[in-house]
Image 1 (cartoon, one colour):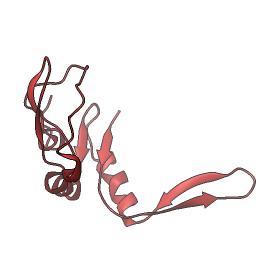
Image 2 (cartoon, helix red, strand yellow):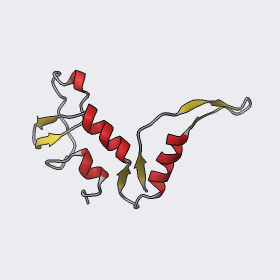
Image 3 (cartoon, one colour):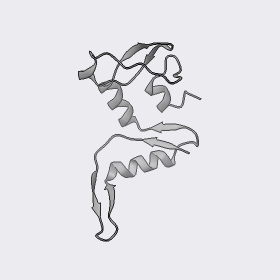
Image 4 (tube, one colour):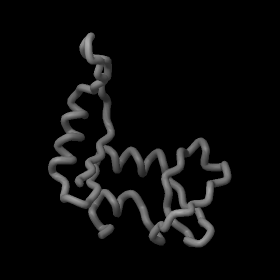
Length: 105
């Protein structure tokens, strides 16, 4: 399985009249598809536009019980709220850039 992530604009809507389907269209949808296609099985890849958006809008480091300090994505306007504690196994010092750049194995 490959996962490709991209940030951009799209148009979505219901298609057909007999069997109703919802679909999305646009240049950024095509880019997201190409990012996924270019990926390596078992890895997460992301476009540079997503990396730039996330690093600008979602900074944050929090200390989680049992896991130490890790970077997480938290919207800037909700940064003052108490974070929920993670119950999963999360690698120490994980950040979105490492995921996007393939540094996490």
